[in-house]
Amino acid sequence: MIAYHDREWGVPLRRDRRLFELLILEGAQAGLSWSTVLRRRSGYRRAFAGFDANRVARFTPATVRRLLRDPGIIRHRGKIESAVQNARAFLAIQREHGSFAAYLWGLVGGQPVQNRRRAPRQIPAETALSREVSRELRRRGFTFAGPTICYALMQAAGLVNDHLTSCFRHAEVRRLERETGAERPATRRSSLRLRRRRT
Image 1 (tube, helix red, strand yellow):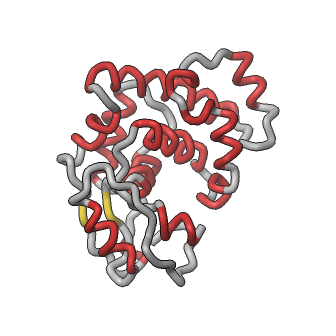
Image 2 (cartoon, one colour):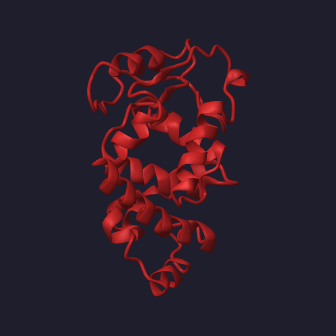
């Protein structure tokens, strides 16, 4: 979890496959801890065709039944079926907007929201913006896309910078705002221990 925080969480993502990966993983997280999902990341990558939305969108009911027996992922029918439905909605947005990234980043004006949280208790589970994103995604057919899941997605994908101001990653991630598509790991390690709500 610390390595994920130090290298990935909050880095602005503008690659569709990485964003689709987060859509699947954040949906799988509903009701669970992020560490539970993260431990199964490789299992999800294998089960969901390397997070290729085109392939996932073609999953059949037989594929879903097979995945329900896969110990490498969270075996929840609703979440698996949601991933397939969301892949189809994801592709529809790509066709309309050229890329899912262009669409998603357009919802925040194209640049990360730079928050200045000083304590974990100041980090909300959802915001007015995540409620707006949720309404947009659900209108387009996404499921498991409530405001809390959407805010977790926005945090992880760097649409908002919710690292605490005391965390060394706050300034590093802020600098990445100026670099198009930068998905660069941290230059040094953190001594932070992540709780349920990452800093």
